[in-house]
Image (cartoon, rainbow, N blue to C red; front, side, top):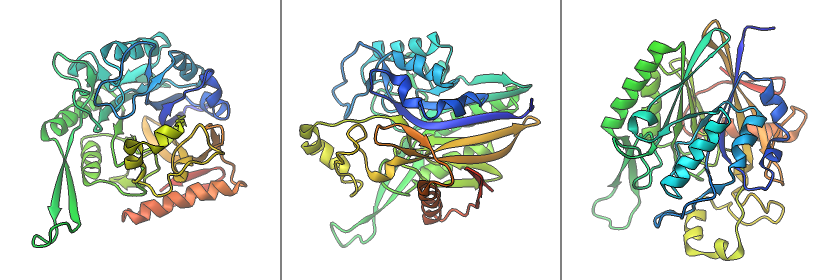
Length: 372
């Protein structure tokens, strides 16, 4: 048996079906072969709670999803997202209890800020790996505080600069930058985690949703800062669409892993609502497709990946990804190199990476793509 440690990581998870384990039918064999499997939970696991007034789209999932995650092979789950407090504190704690009942390590959330910042440390095959999770997509009151539950904040600010000051209504430049105190807290947490573990992996719920390719300024700054402080791998999600992959100081940054086991249905009334149309405007390809009734999202959101990380001698030895496609039943399918969709996903990653002026080399090796 190899002493190498194998980690898989995926993006957003929010099944809506009655039998949630079935959404993992095409991937659980792969996950079972791994030592650690990470995912980002996008829905509350509860039967209680009422959507907060300012919530755009509240996510509620069955508590059975926790067992489905466990049975599919997951070991670490981040719940640090813009949906963690959608249904109030009762639903939030129900979710944490459901995950804990399945012995799933939950990161990025807690009853207070101290707990939300606490790393999960796994010791496997003689290697200690620390996981930390942060959330930039923060409706009011969703971040934890000294005496308030919520997610671990990594807030960001936006500044709009008018390009031609004498021309009202013309386009502007958009500048984003991280909250100084949150950035300092992240630095401190990573340094402390590195003292306790051989490898530090940082999950970040951040980025610009639905718009192809574009990576915000603050994302690069926080990801680079995390690596400068000792992080070994950055796992980004939230955008619901793939984003580029960067190698910085020899460490890999996945700016968005896209959706993975995610269902989203919509009635005709919801599709036609002004609020939904406003968001759909972000991606011109967001139109109803009768062949995808349970995955009402732009076509590009069907392309996704599984990040794969091989750890040897207490260091990350290789990082790659497995191209994946969301099928008509909203289920992720790992693609074989003989499948033309394998190249659809791979070429898309190359395209959006280059679009953002990121110089990353990719090498196809069998059914995976190695990040050089």
